[in-house]
Length: 254
Image (cartoon, rainbow, N blue to C red; front, side):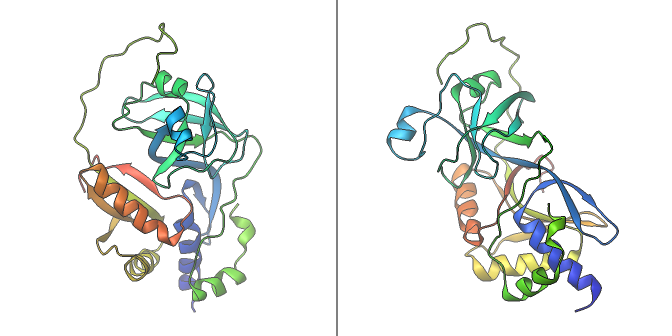
């Protein structure tokens, strides 16, 4: 295996499982800085807990979020992408919740960022406190495992709760249009390897690549114009157990 292919496959391993703010060194490896994820959240309610959709309770008066990839006590910024409102919150204990959702948030957070419960689209941004997020090991090919074993892995490092909340002008709502971002790759060959893998190991056949720059190739599914088809594709690709798939608003109408 030549040097370029070695880095391509290793980069595939890293990128397919994580989505962070990145820095790339001269060898093509990515240094991970902080965890970020865009997707649909779930607003906590007693019924969700009662029906065992969520495994733990949230105090709806608290600024608490459940997020499976982050440790308890981690500070995060939560952004309502549709109106740009943000708030700082803390990650609560580990809890089970639907794979499709990137988190569970309290009613207070929902109110503070004026979340649309019909389209609860948020971004979660880890606020670093001298700590590093380590991705869980995903399911990979035997060939990829051999490469990974030789690679320097240590480089991878709604109830009204506040009547005084100011009302803002309603932003004109865009048509429902999303893609599922699998990963961004430095090498085009790595992106093609990922596309082939998804087609072979899942029922999904409509996998696409977008050339963002000379050194950035995005593998994605979609676009999707309704929540049902989006959720079906998201659940299908989760067979591969990637760590941090993102749902992205398709503002460019790809």
